[in-house]
Length: 507
Image (cartoon, rainbow, N blue to C red):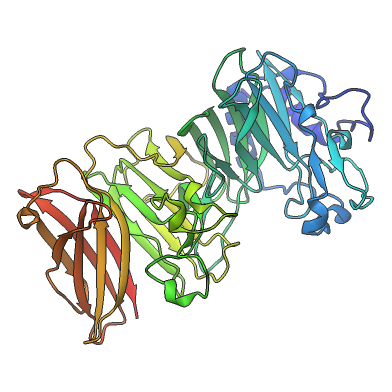
């Protein structure tokens, strides 16, 4: 049974009196406590799904009309961070509303079985004299959260995760910098009818015990098509680990749902370098989709920046994991002193139970600027989620420089390159890492090269003196083909020596 006093506290959030513009003391102001149990979030999501969707109120237009430069003129004063000056192991900052964030989130601090709302207060922010005079009313609230902890030095709380915008959130392993994002849920991505973006509307932050390394965050998701109850147990480090539990309640039948969606950017590398007049050899947050499928195969699909929208589906049954990786890890791979793409994290998804039949979907959207995210990957179950039912799932997210599991994994693909041949056709080269079990005599290694169209040579294997590992090179003659799907792999004694390399070529 849904606890009425808790629902009442939610309904009253918009009426919570706002703190004054100036504070008498530092810190985020908190409202009166209400009873709380983690099961309340599930109950709220279930109850809301039984009713028609009600959009949250918009903040005043002056806040929505802030320019990017104006929005940068207001920032949170970390001295006001949640749990600052206490023995709690974590700190939490908040972001101002406005610009791309026209609706407020509501956040509670949980201690024991009680929750207190964090009230909106302009006094927790610093501004420059260039920040405009904007109205303050009851629709205002914070737009997101930033988590900080002592990662490398006692007394220094460094940020490691951000929740802000729709159901987007980002994380970094210690020593990395922000790159790709994750989402609570994707709906109808790439659909001709248009995508639907669910929102995290409420958060509950459990106060961590003194010395505890992890923090627990509960979140309520809402959307015209569904609601959701989420629990994140977050452990900073290298990699940063997030254990996720979620239950989705369908208002409408969900025919195109994306579980554990990842969003990234890929503009160019050795495969399409000639299309861009740029001093850098590559520009991307991640360079490949990695899949460990239910059959035990490990697949590497280099990312592409196509000239037209490209959608791929990798059918599977009970996948063991998938993720977007950044395998280019040296500064010289990018030669960029500002973006530091070589320090961007990869993100690996491990299902917590059998996910059944479905596919790993990859959406690649054309882009000519690195400011746009144009890559999306997620798990799409085969079965619909019928209206009035729910779907429960658990999974783990590992954010880091090399977060995919290592045990018993075949040779990884390090790089892919392609170019034209004077006599016609194209040559493709695939570099694999070195390992102790790679034979010195590469003639013992079998090569598998296939194409769905045109003709391919059987390929040759040579040792790359730079990497120490094998390089597979083959020639492709497209003929009249407009596109082709490639599959290549190194094998030894009938067993997989390398990942399965997949790629889609278009004329």
